Length: 174
Image (cartoon, rainbow, N blue to C red; front, top):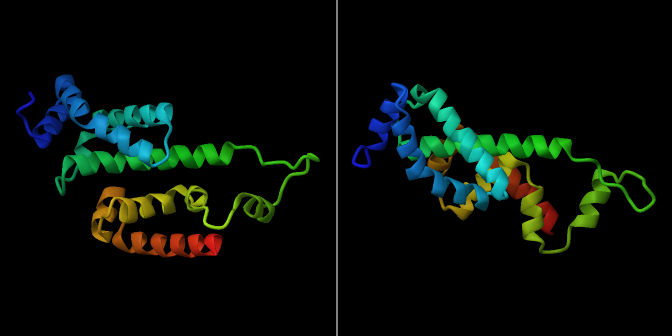
């Protein structure tokens, strides 16, 4: 099966061929895991997202439109799953408290957590949607169109999110 194209394997998945899914997994899970970890997912979270991604491929292989590479389609599923997971985990985190047990305001949290030039911290504080756009365009060097295809969003949304991310980063780092 290793001589089949990704498109052929995906067609096999559509027919219920588990071997085709295994071959797609073997080809794409390693790099997907690495890219998810570069996006801030720890090992266990990245593993869960990879599993969720290939479960989505198994359940709905016909959602691949045929436009672009299968790998980009798989990445799009994976990054959206990661963003959803990060968003949920952020919403479930307890509010930080001061030593006195008082819940810190958002302004206090920012002031306490930002040191001049703390780019990593500033990036970590971006929403998952904004961070994904920054990582795709700046760190991966993708064009707006490529980032849009990869993330499964319109090009205009990539530009808007990048503009918002730049403004937030500028504010935090100055």
